[in-house]
Image 1: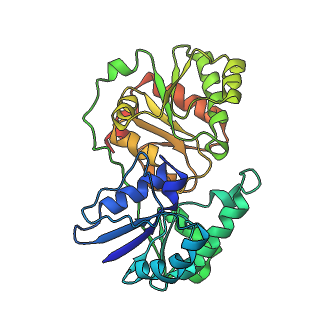
Image 2: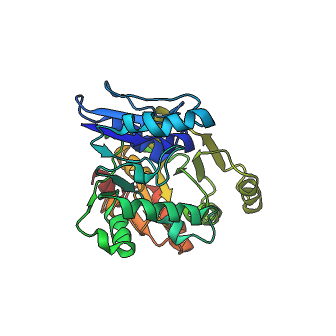
Image 3: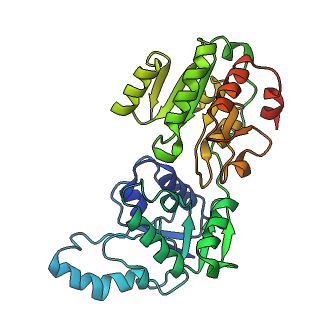
Length: 335
């Protein structure tokens, strides 16, 4: 089985969820399969590992003289014998078009964030155009949650019967219990991942500031990119500058330590195609406090606390209660 992966996502991301998704999918293929990945010089933080992985390259293919040779001979030779094409994103790298692939095409759809927030995310028009073209051309669409599949079929009803749900997984193995008394001496909450727009981070900071007015021992850790200038100003005006610390792009081992030393993950996202951080938190025996929207009920089930991401006081109350320990926290972690 020869599977062709256009390497667009590895050009766009050197870390990140989709980059990691394809690196692990390719690495997990049966040993006798032959994955081909084009257009990648550097895979970034998540390089696929497979005994038959091939990265065919044609140096200088964009030069006028080489381009004719590329289109007439090299590209057809490369595509000959491919059993399945699985592009890593909705658009493809230079030199290819979806129409080049005559065999079965599989597309993975992660979410519809760009459709929901088209007016506030730069570049939404282009992504939505490419997504529509890829889905319409696809022979089969893989969705990472039931919520994403439902969103897909609302927009593309003609794809009914041509979709499947394949849930994501955590690379963290389920951890043993942690000594609870050390966690509650200085109750610390954890936020993981991107913080822009629909991730609702500003909302979380406001709720956390209110909770600290009641319990001044509370702290918040943020794992991800460095704080922006606007975020630093928000911390200053909320009086949280000394109560929030940032771990910039921690390793998996360090991230696991952050989960296990936290009272709870707080994840008030407005929209998720899946939601890996709650899954990681549960694997680390950390309470997950999340939104009750889109895919998150599928991920968390009865193993965490789910709240309306617009009801600030509910989040304040949940954090104060979690910081005290006891109650249903232990039962949820066991679930």
